[in-house]
Amino acid sequence: MDDAAQPSTARMIDFWLGGEHHFPVDVAAARAFEGAYGPCAPLFRDLRAFLGRAVRTIAAAGVDAFLVFGAGVPTRGNVHEAAPEATVLYTDVDPVTVGLGQRILAGSDRAGYGFGDATDLATIDPALLRRFVPGWGHRPVGVVFLGLAAFLDDATLRRTLDELYAAAAPGSFLAVDFDSEELAAYPQALAMMGPAFRMRPPAAFGPLLGRWTPTPEGIVPVARWRPDGPPAGLPDAFHGGLAVRRAD
Image (cartoon, rainbow, N blue to C red; front, side):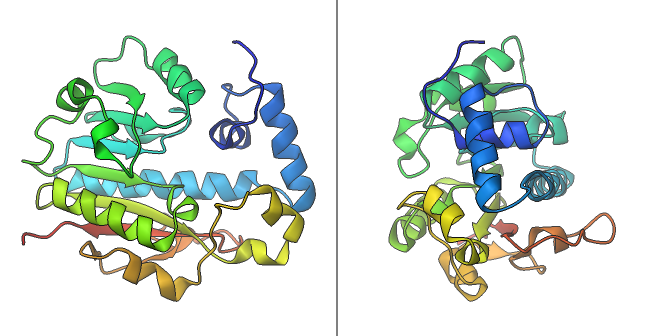
């Protein structure tokens, strides 16, 4: 595996999840962040477990195709592992991560990886969309939108989610998460997130969904969204949930 000059959040998360697809620069950045905040692996395992529960819930509703934005490294319990009978198109804007994902998924006939910017659906390769998300716009799909809301301002996030709503067929699901104000107490760690990072109070999450209708659980700390057992005693750093695209 070639080295990389800059750390990537996606590969840092792979390191925290115990994966194998990261570089020394990512490990150094992950450890520096933990020095300012504390252990991160339990938080990201919790978030990945939420992803699995959400994806399995979507699949149980009869959805068999997923479009994933900000996909990161497609390993360690990602969408195609949580829904092995479904087809999945992973997208990201980081070319190094896209290339890594393409190598990992090479030869798969059910999961692919390509460039895609959630704020501009026209950036997705139409051929990949047809192959891995057949019926996009005409039959229900699962849209996975994790790790992105924190890097979009309110206006951009509302517009993006509304465009996804308009493009997806009725019956589609949106899996989404938001960053709480947890890092406010850790200014050094917060500074490492960069100027685009946005924390939000829980009361702000629901209104940002626009026309998407949350399932009855609402947007809650990810450990408390349909947990498989007693929630772990972790900070409520991430809130998440499912929302549905209703018929207009």
